[in-house]
Amino acid sequence: MEKEIEHNFDKQLVLVEYPGVVENEEKAIRTLGGLHNISTTYSLRNRRLELRFRPDDAFSKPACGDRHKTLSFLMKVKLRRKKKKDDNSSNYNSGEESDSSSELYTGDSSGIIDCSIAISGRVETAYRFKNLCDFQFLPMDKEFGTHGPTVCKYTNLVPIGLPTSSWLAGDAPYFLPPATFSRMDTMQQYLYRKETADDNTTPPNIIGRTRRRRSGHAVFVTFDVPEIPKKPRPIALKLLRLKFLNGVHYETVKKIFEDRPVWSKNALIFLTKYTSEQLKYLLPSVAYYFVTGPWRIMWVRFGYDPRADPTAIKYQTLDYRLRTVGGLKTKVKAKRSYCNYLLPYKSSPSCRPKVAVITKENLQLEKTDDKQNENKCLSDTMYIFHPETVPPSRQMFYQYCDIYAPEIQEMLEKLPAPPPGAQCHERLGWLPSGMDDRCREIINKIITDILKEQTGVQSASLEEKSSKDDQGESEEEIDYEEDDEDLEEREEDMEEEDESDD
Image (cartoon, rainbow, N blue to C red; front, top):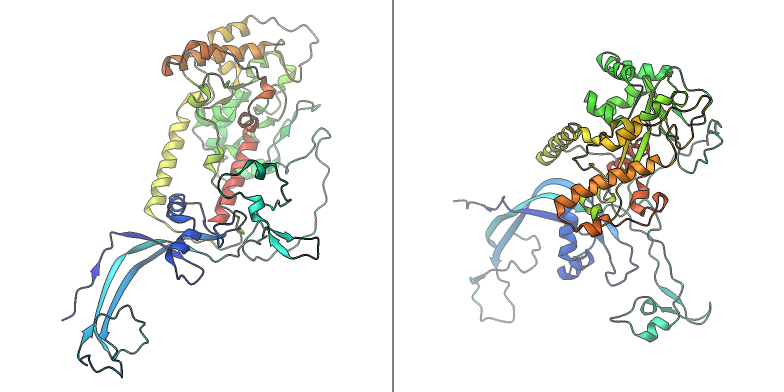
């Protein structure tokens, strides 16, 4: 009668295909960073498992294992066979049996008298080390010039235990290897192409320190352009037909720009309930985009020039940033954070074939992301400032007509009309000098009072003002000093790198 196989499919295991012969399990786990590092890597889906063959060496470059989905199980097999009998000893009975599973099985099944099989658990995740390890640079140098013996200078670079004052006062050898020698860790074929000549279409005031903008056939203008565009590019209208957006979607956006000539993209997302991908093709067909000036990062209807219309003062952009005073910064979420983009140790080529895997986790994540995007678009605080609410992020681009603070609206109504022949200022627009700073102070005071009620922080620490000016903001805030189009392109670059790593 056959025995029933014992199994434990409820137990989930993780497989690590170690690139070597494991004779000591503790040392093998130590090269992987220990159980804590393995658990941390497993909890982060886009992390790679690092294996350092010299775990005690801080300059050791790791070999990275990629995460793969698998469907397998761990099976434990026990074989009982007759114990080997020594020719010189006659004290053992030839029929005596013992468990010899610890002995090496040579393939001879004649002596097997019992076999037991048990399934220890299922394996759904495996880490495989299929890529090359980075170049290793050992901390060694010649002891006496170029002809002396090679000695290790690791102890001079990394102290053992608590360093003494003499160790700190001594000379440090020049050993500064880079974080990585090679960006890619897989062999790939690169097809060299002929370098394309520059078309010299960049305005003279643009330095071009970054890659060229992926405009999506939109019309981008600066404040100093002599004439504003009158109509869209033909390719933009062609893309509408290809994306099936030339019907109700196009008429809806066109009607909104007829009622009001200047809009922000966030406002259009809330009003139309269209996705950012749809507006990416709709906006270039009805409006052009201001890159600099008082209407920066705003979409303006074709044929309308706000520089020649003093009433366009209410459509100007107000760049508001939450001041880092009294712990307020931690109470308002950042617009973007580098913590959301956990990149692996090294990159992999994008030409590697990808395998699509549909799991319940992915479906649940997609549903959650869709719900979050819908909830985000339901709130008008993404482009309107209400005196009783806190902005959704630490930096906001408002239009003055969308700031519902009574004091600011009263200031706009009392502004005198510009004299005949007045020119629009490149930075202030139609506003008087100092009004934008005054509006920021009003908004900051309103937000401070709201957070003071919510958090119960002492008013003395909240009323204290930061000595930093707008150009002296913290490094994190400077990172956000970009328009929405540049930030979207950066997000697309990060997503492309994540996809190439998966």
